[in-house]
Image (tube, rainbow, N blue to C red):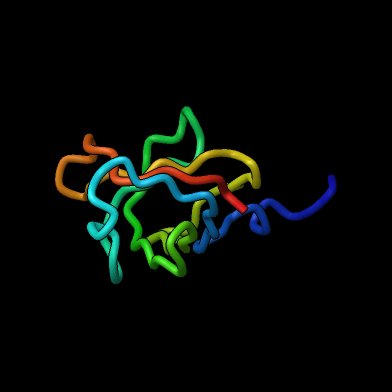
Length: 91
C-alpha cells in the first residue's frame, strides 16, 4: 500500500489551458456546472471559479476520487449536463 484510500479524494481541482467553445463570458463569476474528470466518470455537480482567462478551480459538492494531473476535465451546463461549456487540463 502506498497511501490511504481517503487521500485520493479531492474536493477542489485546478484546471489550466481552459478552452471555451461557446461564449467566453458564460463562465464569468462562479458558475454551477457538471464536470467529468475522466472518460468513464459519470460527471459530478460543482462550482467553477474562473481564476484567469484560461484557468479555473472546480469545487465539487462531494469529493471526487483520484483527479489526475494531465487528464482533461470537461465542464457541462448544470441544466441538462449535455452542453459543453469548457474543457481544460487537470493540474
